[in-house]
Length: 447
Image (cartoon, rainbow, N blue to C red):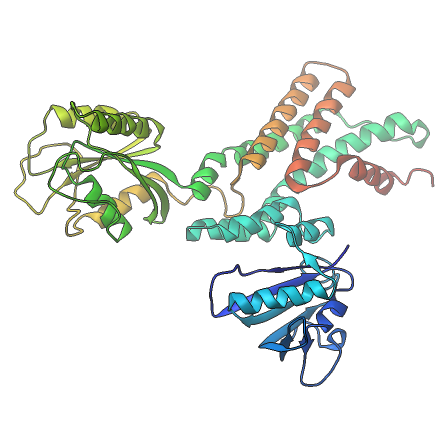
């Protein structure tokens, strides 16, 4: 493959910036832009050790004093010869370094191309490759832990026994049919049923994590609801830690939904501050109220804000009805710093003004979305994985039904192969190559 290069740390101003290079002939390209004090060729630098030197531009002028590190393949991230230049984080310096590398024969790397090469060269499977971007985009510690575990192969290790057990069934079947002279015994029906049942249980447990994985990666859609002037925007600002929404004593100040993301109680919330729900003759405000109801209908969590200093009224009840559309509901009695007149069961007393009760709110949110359950790294965090696991599970159930229904072995095999193909979409395995290899490894056919 040709030599690729890219800025790995982005183009924002920072203390350190990294330029990464990979491909056959990588070290010759790097030789053109780096000068160590020893004068050694780049290919002679000690592997995996930082070397201080000068970074040169296209005209051979020094543009930075940087650290270079050489990663010989196949023991590198991509499986090819790789190198990195750790420079001062000036976008101008990084761009000049990249331009010099292009002049020396490299080309601009495409999106994800380093990780793609790592996959193609067998350094990562697909679950690990996808975990790289999950780790980069993690917004909570829990999401980072899960992505790091998947990068370490946790999901692959969960799926490999399922794939291999189905592969054993398929290879045994083909060996019996294609090589009758080898006296290979058929697998007993009970053994096949046990294998299919164990595989089904494993995939059911994984499939059940998809909803949690979606929340882990994308956050909980959360609507802040209530009538005008109860403190919805003040609550949004308090949760964010800065003044994002305009707060006034004028009812109807918030005319449209305001969306932000915040980590509360270790849970990522996609917060939507809504217009106060009430009957109004103002056309703009009426549109805002309609959007508030839409936000409630699309939320997984509703935070209903009531004014604790006033009794419950019809507008509060209308907001409550809208909030009940969400699967999860927390009722907050705001303005607890004022004399209280509200009576509402199980309402959490808070003051968005001075922060009272926000710690209890965080605990309540954490209780609704606990971290426990599946082991870290065994949570499906993207739709592609979840859909493939669901198709594999459906095929497994079809294989079990064919087996217990007395259908011919090829019907069972067809569904088992469909299950393996779907699993291969998750990990990147190729069914036909693995099947052929397994037949020859296990039965020594043609000996």
